[in-house]
Length: 409
Image 1 (cartoon, rainbow, N blue to C red):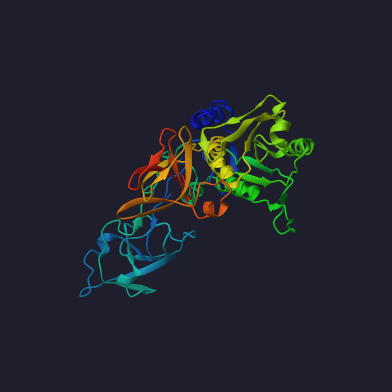
Image 2: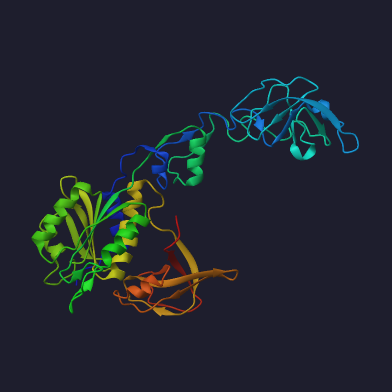
């Protein structure tokens, strides 16, 4: 039996083959979830000018320093200032101006008295409490100063980042785009969900599973119709799809059977490696490049659990590298095993599991059996226990490395 390739060796080969996609300026809303390809510094200060933090009255502190409930201060109201509509640029001593939250404070104002401390007078206001100097005034640059570095290259942009970018006036930002992932399922036995099912046919779940996984990883996923077990048909379908693919993912047709069309169609190219990986499930794998643009192609096993575990292990790092996201692979957590399990020698076993945590710590329980066709058990899982190749048994209570499948990273 040929030697099995260690999992880290194939991951290293993949990352050496795949390159980050070229970055370009993208509109803010399109950049959500993408990685910055530039450092971002503030082109303006936030706030850009001194403004009111409350609805109330702009005053000079010295004029109201003695104000109290027993000895209120009365000031004439000389104007009204609304946000975005500055109507009073300077405040004379001994006067007050009604001011709204966010409005620019006039010259001569060094505090804002909230409505709650007044009688809300129109021509004259009665003030019953003295503010501190600069109280309820948002000082220019108090949040962000012009020239401050705000975001670093590689930051994955979330809603709060986009809000900050918009607030400093950025309409676009340089990011690496979402990779276009084409997913192809092969097998003459496959049928589209919703169509009649024959006695010897099955519904195609793999393409939905893998396309959804690609989309969840941040990619643009194109799910291609089912390709039957015919090498020429597969080759034609692949050629048609390369024009819109940064990555191609196939499932099925890579083992040692008589109808493993993916392996048959691609082996002659000389640019796609096929072999066994020291992993369970997911031993049969293929990886290489196809087409004039040397598009990376992943040929995954046909059993659904094997296909999903292979995607997590090999395709996900490639997608993240193309997007400029770090780390490339899902980070390992650690949890206490609730039930013992065995593992084959020489293979990294990926055990479907349920992760749970409470004040007593994190716990992980194996879910279902080892069969690579048990999709129901996979759907009930939210984690994979990673059993190293040199470990053949684990006991209840052991601390084990775990991939948490539903965690963003």
